[in-house]
Image (cartoon, rainbow, N blue to C red; front, top):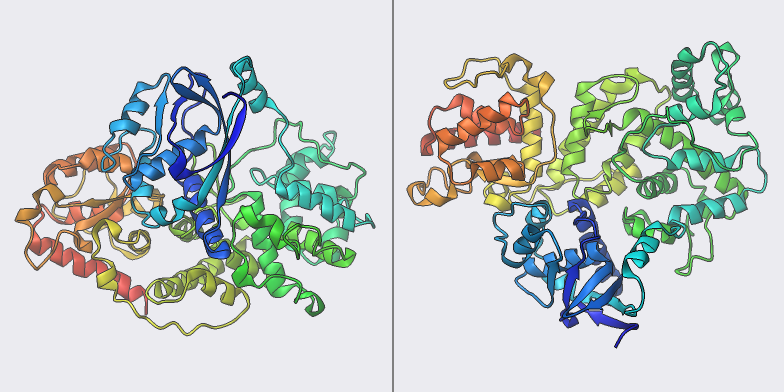
Length: 600
């Protein structure tokens, strides 16, 4: 029958789906898939295995197939999840892109080679999928045959979107703020545009173009935003040269901000605005909330930094009727605090440019950048970046804010990372540590896991320890010494300037697994840390089954292209002409000693 809507569990999907030629390619990254699995995990714990609704899949009948009009990304992800646990309920084919279809149908999940490879690599290590996926349900809608499906597809992709959750919150805050002493709509709009800066928005939207000294105002805005964080001073203080005060900028009569100037620079923030909102709310609850309001708000340990639950955290009931910030003074306090946090975020949390290069607004500081990158790439929940909460809270408690504080921040973040290293060797959860730290509660960390055991799990070795080691090698190791087998075109004295931590997904065995029989002595098992390195999927594919010398040639090619992925690997191939059990054991002891020393 046509034009039917049916509710189906995943194991009830037996259909033959097809992706039509007018559909785009699969676009979900590891971040979206990771967020889905985290949502499933959180939902399952909260609801005790109730059904998790993943949305509607819209299809039309086309011979033996159901052509997917809406829901391709979700359906393909479900297919990959089933494939990862060895199940196949439904089929998924492509009208074009035969290589994708071949991979979905026959692909070797151990050596993914196409656009699905990162998702597949991630899914291989998610042991909870089999337990979680059984709770997923969808609705399957089959539209009538007489509808022009291409036109239907275009309409669906061009239609106005529903209000996002943070836009609903904006409306509720504005309703609570009847006294318009500031343009709160503008504050919210400025804060929500995460992929530019408030400095840029003020400069291009609010400073008159006829101002002859406009070229200097960027620095004046920056100075004012950084230094005048007392609310009275920040909103009543003057810019030099008689430029507008922040109060004036935020009190103009516009109800909404217009963004028509093409000169505004666009960057990419490392978190989205809904995530930022939850992080600011956590700091507000921990340190800014009046005592008389504390009972109404959720306990920090119940707040998962996940935008799926954004509206829940701002209301007392599940129907989102009882808004927690109905009190005008409380709403004002939160809005101004949100602005302050966003300004701090702009200047002290790195962004990425269009080429994905990390940088800070207004200056360079490699030390601060590297420690933030360590947190960024190793975050257990990559999309939420919980460490940002601690850094913003620390900055909020500082009396003076300017770029001279950078080195103090490095020291603070290194201390936090060292404590988190110990947390990873204990039974304490990282998020519990962060919440206690936010509330100024000291934790007595009991080490209950042996580091050398954690580091001897082959491809299951936590990636954090590779990132941590590369950070320590970058900061403290003497790469200026003469090695036995130095690379050409690599200036060892400038490694600290050229190397940056980046997100990597594949653990490489330096001595190839295919030749494990000749490398089984007790001195260095195949899966020990000495024989492992964290690299990209692309590099891993290039090194598969190659011997030590041929791998070295591939790394030389990487160096010629000015991309170093792993300092640990660079060190191995620079220090040792050959790779044997003795060298592996020596390298293992040296690397573990470096990591262990950092835990003291």
